[in-house]
Length: 281
Image (tube, rainbow, N blue to C red; front, side, top):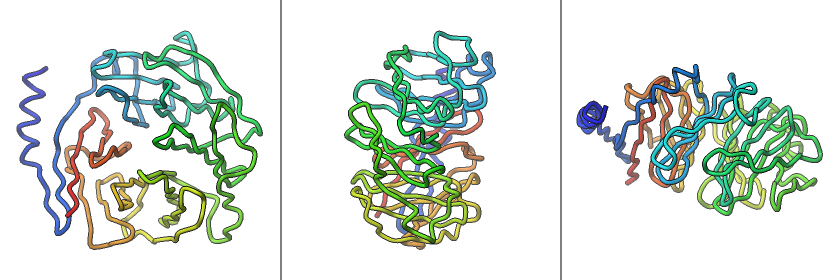
């Protein structure tokens, strides 16, 4: 397996794509471990873990998996197959005290340790039935509820009842929100179902909107000072500067999920994770 991994990396080293203002190169490649297929796990959400690990969430099977160098292969959930089960997990994130999982139907945040052992669960009041969430660099979680059409802040183990951003104040922002993202400065980005990206400051002030020219964008990713949208075919562009485009290598498409960390992108495909370095000029 190590020899195959090194061979794939040597091939991918030539997959360096240079555009007018950006260079995109694959730096690493992680094929799925055999345990995923043994458990019939097909992850549809990806998150960077700790110490070189990754978190993979299968929303259909209600299964959370950690793979990588920290603890090898760990799993939790799966319709009562383990010590703790989820009802409808919609998000997973890493915070200073462990791993948080947002369960929409249970209206709870479940806190696990870094080995996916259950620690506690916190009910959300009011019952907002959350759908999307992000976590900032300080460990504060921001949660979107379509029922309230608002973004709420979760801190100090409680949900603030007053929305951090009340989207009802903006008549042009549709209730259909595909993605919620947050950048290194704490600013928020929303991608709606009409290919429009809305930007807000970390304090909730409206900053503007941009229409994407990409066909059927479903991912919103901040990279430094830019916001990029991607579709599952790997086509990407900066929403504020249409001259900055990205094309994810075909080996990593169709894209299942995509997450950023600094200048790196983690691309989840049907059978592997690839790491791409992005250099903006």
